[in-house]
Length: 233
Image 1 (tube, helix red, strand yellow):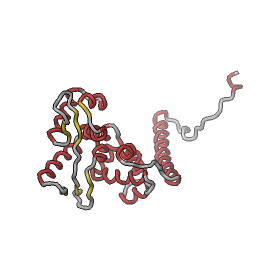
Image 2 (cartoon, rainbow, N blue to C red):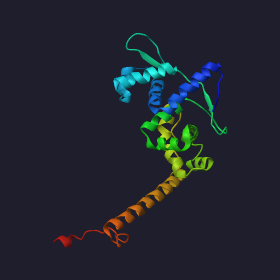
Image 3 (tube, helix red, strand yellow):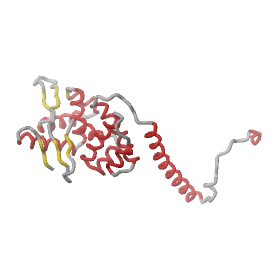
Image 4 (cartoon, rainbow, N blue to C red):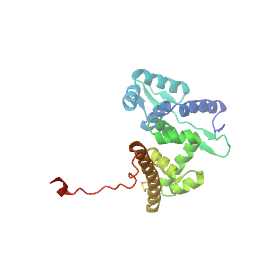
């Protein structure tokens, strides 16, 4: 991967190595994103907000200080830490896409520790794919695209596009100034169709499992019916 920046080459290399650690370890990304979002934080505040043990919190903070992405504002105890803005543009391995490392992207990576949908998307499409999805999420929340357009552009299923768009919404509203517009009615109807198809498939699988378990051929034809009160008299 190549790096582009308007800073000195030594700073670019340090940024690249620091960002590599952040993107590789979502726990570090989570801590950096919290400080960047809040403006400043003490270790105790990090422990409380992120539910970290004291030893773990100090280890993460020291690693980020050594990496140069956060710094202490005062030497007195308790120290307060602020995040250093990272100025770095990455070119994907295929050379076809560039994406800029931003606090929003780092925050999105941090969410993989608590959001299985984001974790799965990164596993399948990488950090570059997540960065692209983040851009589409901003555009969708501004009412400029639909999930089907994203799916067509990225050659993924409409349902997969909708899932990651929904997962990234909290990140977008945390880092971007957007007036909530939501998806169009037609867009929502399309999502419902996709969701229903998955639900139908799950129902068929559940029925098949029930047939195998109970050995009843008539389960597929069974329908619920109202109970006649006379039956209990």
